[in-house]
Picture 1 (spheres, one colour):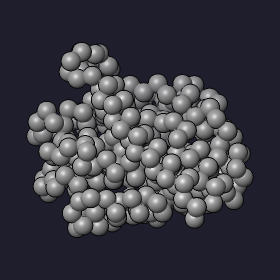
Picture 2 (cartoon, helix red, strand yellow):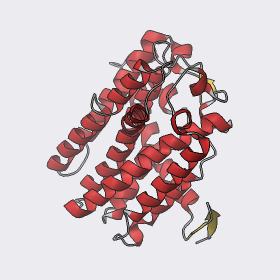
Picture 3 (cartoon, helix red, strand yellow):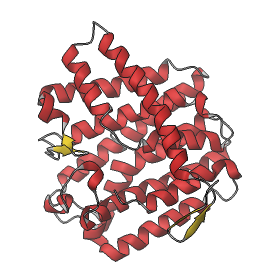
Length: 307
């Protein structure tokens, strides 16, 4: 395979091809899902269109790909995890639709396109988000696999994305908007609003693959470090003006008085923190063989993000 240089490290696999190949598989599943939703006479047409608009607007499918890579790291094959992994994108999309609402971040653009509520109205956008979240658990519960594993996955995601996870982080983020939060506050927001779901995605793959307790613990640490680093880098991109993926203006979060790593620690210190987190994430996989290479390189790829 080609050898690339990213962040002064030699990468012994083509991680961009790995990400693209899996993204196509996930998009293929999502297209079938949304096509069936549009054909379902019991689903209002406007609602199905709003769900489709939000879900198929692009994106790197980071969380599903992490689940697949984690599944493979413990000896599974991506085909056996595809439905469950793809369901994670429905949860992620629901969170974006709701985050963009006037009552939350009040954003007009998402990935350089009008946000869902700007196209379909606030009420339909809220319901589209609700529908995507609910359908995610329907997909998981009806997937092939050991029912006990599927129940464990549902429990995992309920915790990662609920009031003790993503939703809780979003609430604190809103409560502290325009206020000077402490470093502890910023860590809470980042580890819950973004980090909890990324950690959950990694754990979902490990659980579906039947990981041992030792391996699950190692992958949990990997997910925690990678999830936090992802949000720290997102904060940095907001400041540096390279956050083109989501179509926001430079410094959009700072302008709203958001509590970010650069605001709490400074830009250079934030870069150092992100770099150390990725090193720690990769180190957590020290006892894994080459099956975990995609996870190692995804972590390094996250550190190299430019959008």
